[in-house]
Length: 100
Image (cartoon, rainbow, N blue to C red; front, side):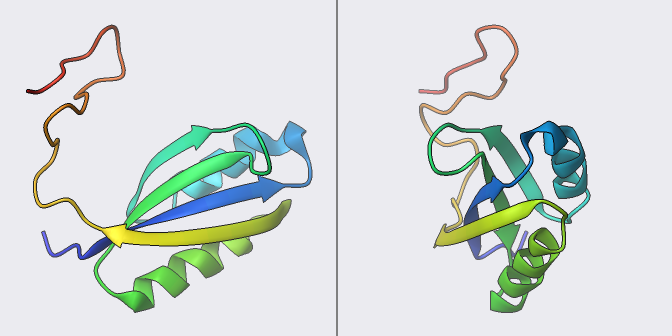
């Protein structure tokens, strides 16, 4: 599909009461594929598929425009050649299906 990499964003925000609206805004960003709440220095982990570095900066800027974002870090990794890969779950509902 032309995706070269996955960008993993770690997002911290100032007002935890706004988590629903922050997630709604994140879901509107094209190519965001994964959002999960985490504990520690950050509040959310967000993954996005990208085709080139221009998209990295575009998504980064879109996230920073969301109100109550106080800190954002990004890490880049190679996009998987196939999905799901061996051992990944294909569903988050119930037990899912683990692929061998």
